[in-house]
Length: 255
Image (cartoon, rainbow, N blue to C red):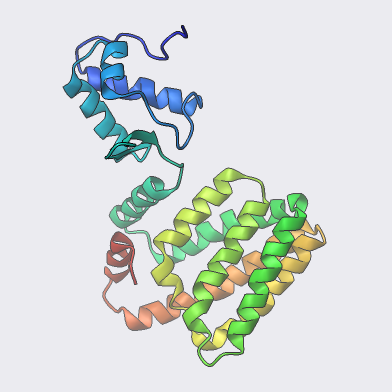
């Protein structure tokens, strides 16, 4: 019989130790996304704790997004797919409390996305180029429509994330996913008439990535972000004159 993956814990605040051990087992991939954890009865026996302790530990893990619970005959507690939802919420709260202005966000994006583009040019694969090219084609089709801005924001964001994915650096991708999720509403302030120029800029970035021109890719994405940030900041401030408007937006995460 296999050795149980967990060991007996001390009763003082034992639910925290139970949660810590289960979390560690997930981090070590002894339980992978989609796997079902042992039943509450099995966990009680392995940890030598009460049902209430197990329930408290699972609630703690659920709040952090590590596990989720399903009811019914095939229910139980399962390991969640890893995503940036918890990180995004913490990041949004930090920005709200620190009153981070748009100008500082722009500086942050210049640094993160510039280096992501640099490494994307060095590490990109065929499927990355196909993804980017498909997104640029979609942007081109939208530009031919009467109101390109309605659909351009998600496609533009997807292109930036495709570049991050091509960098083969999971931290770049996670941070950029978080920034784009938190500030989706801010990006919608890109003026309608500027999308043609934005598309041209991203085409240049794509050509640099395809040519493995790391410096060119970094320079291109930084120029694109600097230009679009200036337009966004001007447009946003014209529509939101109150000094706290930006922080209210980030706290809600909506336009």
